[in-house]
Length: 511
Picture 1 (tube, rainbow, N blue to C red):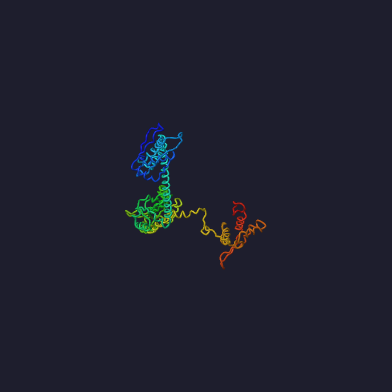
Picture 2 (picture 1 turned 90 degrees about the vertical axis):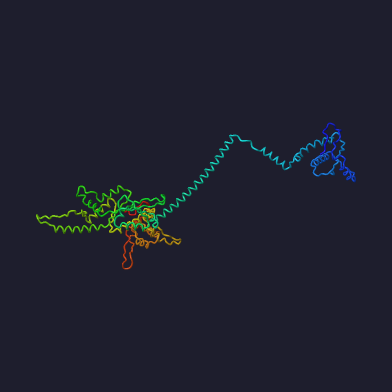
């Protein structure tokens, strides 16, 4: 780069001398190259300035530029008033060029300069540091958002758990309903047998019968001696917990039954007859109010046979041991003779059993053998197991019984087929109206409109009431068939049903 003078006070000072304008080998070659063209390029002031700037930039870059690229700058302007010396103009322009070229000479390219400007812009747009209050408010908002997300997640989890619980509950209800069916309910029953029953003769038969039924069996001491009770495994809502049933079957020995029955028979003849059959059962019901008790007595006929034999034996002994002294017979008694049961007749047993059932509702079942007792326990087990299913089936929602034929209704097609049967069923809705009666009325008046038309043709109410009374009702066929009339009562009831405007009208009224 060339050097120039810094002094600008004297306008008549010589122009600066640049190195590329000095004479030398390069200038000689340049001069030789232009010898054939003597014409010089003259630049005006603005062009001279641009040329100077361009030359200055090119000199600063200096990358492989040869001295052949030489420009001759001159100025021949005659306007002295507006003339600004070239040195001063070059100095002013040269300061701007040096400023623009500093980024290049400092080793920074245009892209680096743009990056520096971008960083400067980011630094200017960076927000100021927040205050403590703003930080606190920001933390509170962030905490609330986190809590809201946690609540939302918790609500979703609670909803999912509730849906799973409802699904499991519906499944348990379906399983519980299936467990009540007759083919499934026996599997969920548990028969509790008192150990005293198994110690008696043929007690093992009872246990084998219960196990063959398909239900579970539990041997445990019962509140009532020699009794059998039942438990049911609940699938919902107890989930497998055994719930006791109310029914209890107690096997009463013949000795106990006869003793209690005899006390009942003798209660009016003695001051303190002791507990009777009825009072003993009432005492058991008092201690177990939630149980439905039933009694079973096995082989009572053996007692009656024994009593008959004992009666005959006593009669023979009385005849053989008569002492005619004083006209009185003396009864002999062997030492150590066992006390026999009191004598009770069949009629007295039936009387005691009826009294028991009337006052306590407890029935007594007499069975001949232990095998029959096992069958009785088996049948009772099935009845207890199927009881809930039968109760649910009987809950029809009506206070009266509907036959299956009536509950199904009568279908009527678009052509009107079936209306005759609908009219017949309307007549049969009346009390004490048989199908034969309805058929007789149907034969005379096949439709409701025909009957109403017949009522309208009657002149008096008495004639209307007795309109149907003479219709014949045929029963049977052939020689065995019989006939009877509808009668005035049914005719009146049908008339009231068809013509009364009172919804509270009693059809059997005599008014």
